[in-house]
Amino acid sequence: MTGPILETPRLILRPPRMEDLESWVALVADPESARFIGGVQPPYGAWRSLVAMAGSWSLMGYGMFSVIEKDSGVWIGRVGPWQPVGWPGPEVGWGIRRSAWGKGYAREAAAASLDWVFGALGWERVVHVIHPDNARSRALAGRLGSRKIGPARLPPPFAGEPAELWGQDAAEWTARRDL
Image (tube, rainbow, N blue to C red; front, top):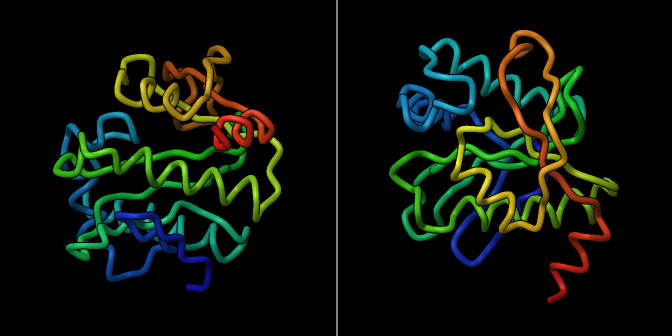
């Protein structure tokens, strides 16, 4: 899969590969890690989401990145741009394995993704779709400079699920990023 490779001080962000499947399965098999990203899925569900993300890269030129910890080479999650049909806007989202929580990896990867979507892709705005009970993601969105916009309406199969829309535009990100 072709696409950019982004590097941060501690992470490598690259398009997903089939070699990520075992780790992707582990992410969505863990009830806590998967709670707000579609819930626990069996291995075939993880496979479907992995290949959907790879398909997004192929067809749209972007998708969530696989996030690799530089020091260990371990796959720790998926973070980045995503916009399925009917989604409330161009999203930068995140899903990190529980073993990597609390280390600032989601913020580091999301910031690199925001730089990339506003710079390379030329997006004018970005949203984050967050379940109201997901205090960790709400806090992360705020640390990234996003603000709560209001309730989100999601397409099936998520229609009817509670969701908040958080976001910011490119000018807000650039002003904040330059601080």
